Image 1 (cartoon, helix red, strand yellow):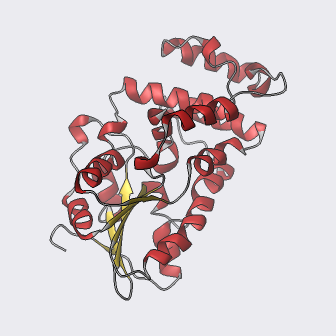
Image 2 (cartoon, rainbow, N blue to C red):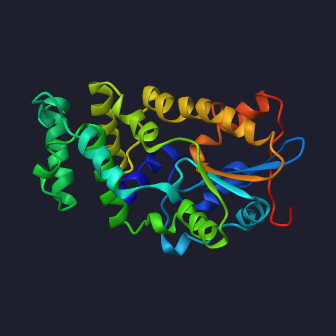
Length: 269
């Protein structure tokens, strides 16, 4: 289940930390409040062991922060609760079959992908398309050597546990996976199709509804929380997927619009 949650990297970006640094000058940004600083860090949720060393800017932010904030509070995830949620919400309802939900052409493509990954198709046939997409993503990235245990969040979580730093989440499990669950049947089918295409590095299939639901809308929900942190008297480190940080609808631009001036963090800052 932890790996399946990590498969939401489709929404936050997957690659190397070096790529994040090139794109945004630094993978970590400092936003200064009146009495404190919030460090906004771009996460890559899954990494290969060979790429897992975090840039020094993460050390700078972590050392300064008293509280660590992530998309979900990983320190408070209950395995039984996660399993119960998936059993209740990921299953197809009202007698609908996966073949009916996604159509013959997509179902045939899914059969080929499942066979390639060594996954019996019948394991997927009772799941909603969004849950199938996460399952395929999970298996593909594991096959390629990516590991959530090497990802930015898990590395930071382990350090925070050892140092007994408090951890918070910007949203709950229900809020995060609920963004996928509430997609319309056709949007879910398109999400699954897009997932299968991206697994073969196909040209990106624009899906503005998905981006809006899973990136932009979540950014808008998170922004007031981050701005409340800036009214506190101690420093925070906020770790979110890279797609949530950059771009016109990213948290950096939203904060600039609200009058803040994020600056890239250097190792010696």
